[in-house]
Image 1 (cartoon, rainbow, N blue to C red):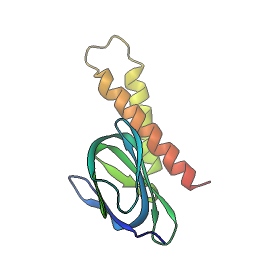
Image 2: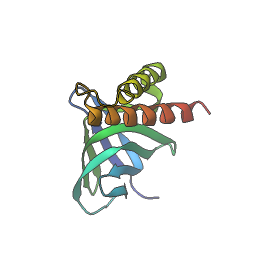
Image 3: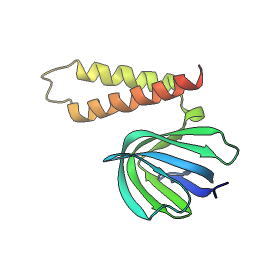
Image 4: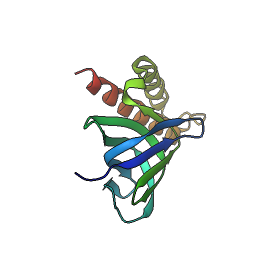
Length: 138
């Protein structure tokens, strides 16, 4: 059996994950990547997406991340995320409210007071958080 690696996912506010994993898959800015024990070291930026990992009990886990950086070492993966939430911790009602706010902002075409780039990013975050949270309920 292959060795486990240590996975750390942290945000500026808190440590979200700190545990052993068999494999880690993350949304790199150039595409999804996977890391097993013994991986060649590298660093990459992350895009909005889901970090998936298999814990030492062989259970697949999911963590929403909205950008940041990842460092892979032979026995450790460290993710420094702008924001991150375990799937089980996502407040679906809050995510749905964020979705409505983003849609309302985007509906106001031509309004110079609206930052449409920011509104589109908020929409993408809300949609991904909702989709991830709802898959946990299936």
